[in-house]
Image (tube, rainbow, N blue to C red; front, side, top):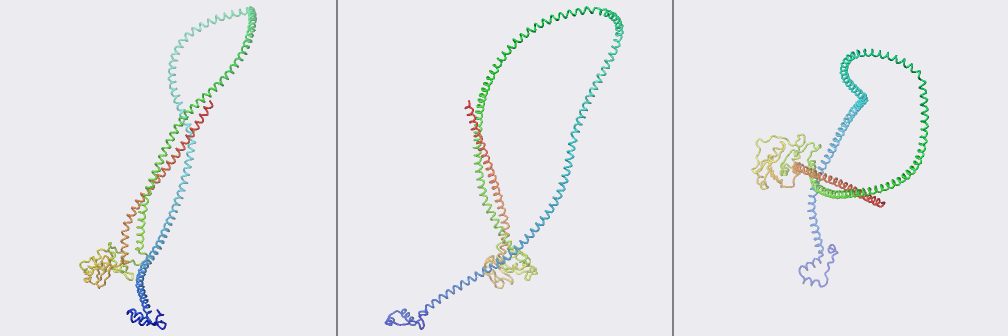
Length: 577
């Protein structure tokens, strides 16, 4: 464009161009004249300038939007910064509280430890005393036990003596009775002896007569000694007779010796015969032993056969037990799978319920932390003392605005002062309901709340705006505001005070929701725990059934091996036969 203007412009007219200008259209002539004048580039620059102006206007419009967005972000960041400061303060307070709590717990634990040590020392002393008493009692018991056998022996001896004395007394009683009887008999015998004495006297007289006769016989014996020689001759005769008898006896002895020799020869023959018979008997005994062994082998074979039959029956029973154990193991496995499926099915509702309860608890904690008044806040705002019904938070925030952040404490530079109610308060326009019907606050807000009316719609607010008395306001639930002096504010985004009130109401609602969520979470947890316990029991039951199956299989294998061994032993015995 610069090259087409000024001294550097190639504004030249070629040959024949004038005739062309005369015959051309006006627009073409204009273009040629502009080129000849050297102002064509100005249009291009004008167009570029217009484009730049439009771009600048667009950028300015976007800049306003960006500035508004940045201001909104700045306000949000300021709120977040305030919340972060409050969170930092709360975190510090929580850490301090936790430190104090831990210190108190540590102090309590130290105190409990000291008390426990004292009790332990007392218990040790008591245990020592009781041990000493127990040892003394044990010693006394041992001494008593040592003294007890002699006492028992003495008791037994005394009992024996008592028994003997009792028996002796009974014997003495019996002997006394016998003595009495004997005395009676002796008395009777004495009488008889006296009678016999008379008879004995007569016998003595007879004896004296007999002695006289004996003296006479003695004289006769003296005369008999003179015939002894004749008796010796008779004895010599008897000796001769004995010698003859001796000779006869010797002859009999010789005959007996001959008989003994014959008997000895016969004895030798009998010994040889006995030895041959003994050898034959030994041979027969060996044959009998062999036959007995064969019979025993046959008996063992029969026993092996019976044992094989018994072991076969045991093997069948073991196989049946294995089959039953396998079936029980499969049933336990199915039960375990079902229990695990039920546990898995109960886990998801439990996790969802716990997650929901955790989310509600986190939300409640966040709201409580945001709404709590820290120690650094010397003058809590009046908004924390207000209770508002649901749906009227925005209206209250629009009606009072930043005044809700002012405290009630009279020591604060700015505060709400408590004044008595109006004697005759100005009445609100007809159709407006006092905000105090829906808001419960301190007495310091009574006048202000009584002069704020709630209208249903914006039309009602505009209609009643002119009827407001000084100090009165109208507000809708959406936040539109009309003040008595003509100030009007449309419904906009909720203010920080309205959001704080909504958060407080939400926190109040969360208490019930959180309790219900925790109850459901507890029920879901109990159901899951029951399912988990059932799954664990089913798993233990399956393991027990598997162990029983392995035991049954081991028993089956043992019986099978024993049966095979018995069959091999029976075959070996039969092959030896």
